Length: 105
Image 1 (cartoon, rainbow, N blue to C red):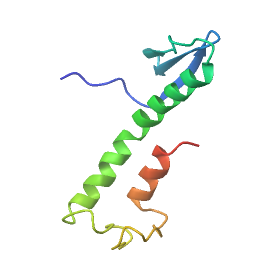
Image 2: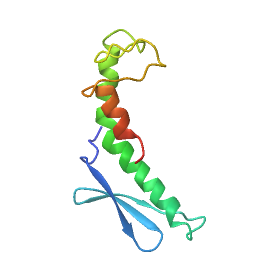
Image 3: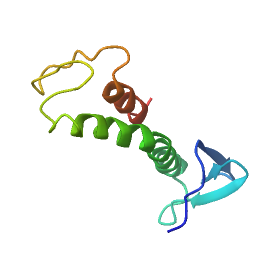
């Protein structure tokens, strides 16, 4: 299996309603809204989602692996969170960092 284009990726406007997703000097994807080209905000939202997902993927995988080695998802290895309703991660928590990176601005 080939390697994907290195991150970080970025979204760049192209025309009035199209966005491109770039990784370094390589075009990764064209993002348009063919059903309604008058909705550039939809094309931008889709491009931003692709970029956010690609750029946060490695951190999310690392965070999940950190939890997995503890034997499940009942606790956070960095913060000792034992119940899902607790949400007080410590500043260096890999789960908290990954989740913040994956959430929209």
